[in-house]
Image (cartoon, rainbow, N blue to C red; front, side):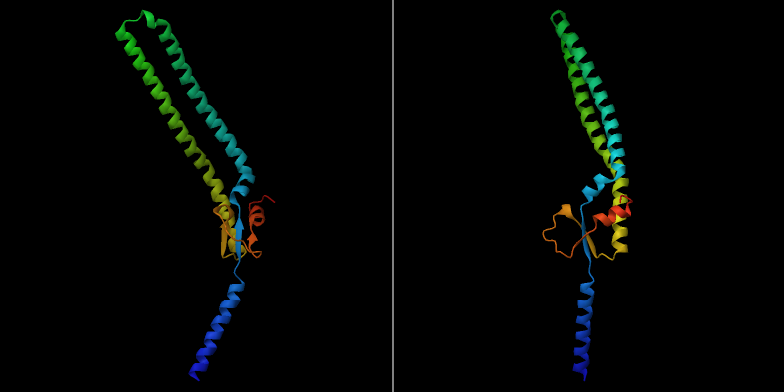
Length: 169
């Protein structure tokens, strides 16, 4: 009797597992593709273009200043005493170092600015994916770009559902 009850319990457990396994839903999405379609991206691109244009102007102005001083130095070099020539060369080298540092700093700040502007868009997309996952009972939603090696015919592309959640369709 005990063996029969144990056997029934095991069979019921296996049957329950099989039923639950059939309900597992796994989805996939290309977040990069959807993000590029989001209307907020065009605003982000405009803001970054404006920001980068301001930085480029600043660097161009610095470069023009250095060229002007270098040209002046080259014209007057023949008539300068050696100590003044050496001071001016050091000043030109310092200006060149400042330009290089400014370029590196502005490049790092541009990357930081891009991440700041991108974060709310990424958060909005991730929230939409989470909402779709919960509403549609997905166990997992995988990122296609992460390199899914196999995709069953039963896997569901949640991109269109997420676009709908974002109000894009």
